[in-house]
Image 1 (cartoon, rainbow, N blue to C red):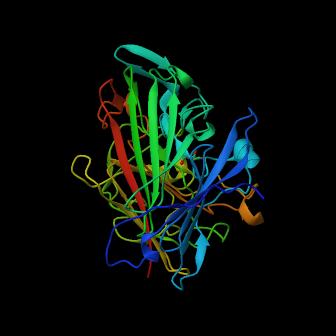
Image 2: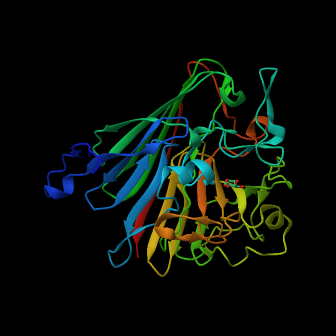
Length: 375
Ligand code: GLA
């Protein structure tokens, strides 16, 4: 029996909450050793409502997320694997932190302060999700921390100067909090010692009916965005910011994901379905509602709040039944969806997009909340 770390009680001083409600717990267990010999741990965060998030230090990955359905029955709503080996060998970024630059950079190159930087072309000649060994494939240092909101885990990684071709030593901290209001809150923080680019996100694949329980086409999605950024055949943004009105990309009111996913539309064809960035309706970088998803059979609902300007909605088009995940569940076509909060894809090469440059003395700080409820 693996040595369990002593339970950490995470107090909050809300006088009218019962003793039990005020408590959340964190436990730690070993989860294996990477091929390069690094030990990996998995932390179990349990909040006062009994919801659970399991997070491992490899990739800062959300391995499990248990939240109640309309009957109060707990279910795991994120795709993933039971063991480290599968994550190392075949994970399409299931649940991991993504960086240094989430999503794509065209031709795997960008220019900063007149200097050209070449990155790994790890996706059809383009650069994707931080390169060959992105933040999803490194082991993060972890520290359970006290938080008034609920159990929290602080992860730290120092990305060295020119790692994967990016300039600057980037000091990154990502804190996951499983609040007692059934929110998975993710705080991203980074500083650099040289001018660089930074665009961090999380790559959970959700299925609110439960991981492995069929496809997500019946989920009803609302995206708080009147515009999106069209792409070319390499899924690189063209620079245009296009209205969603009258297109299959209009999710301003709740619509079944499957309703128009096979429409005869060039952007749908390029995305092989949905795999695009939406321009969120907001002033500057305010914290606001980005999206809402409802799954009718379970009654589960997820709201996404963020101070990021964009949201990548990916409908799991590359999932094709070749991956077997937790509890032997086979992940068929479109059996999970991602809502990746972000700055827009290829922003380093798009001067009209919100900038992603980080300079010494500046602090990169973003927050995203996935809030769960039922109806
Ligand atoms: C992101 C991309 C998709 C795909 C997935 C991971 O969501 O936009 O094209 O690469 O990551 O497989």
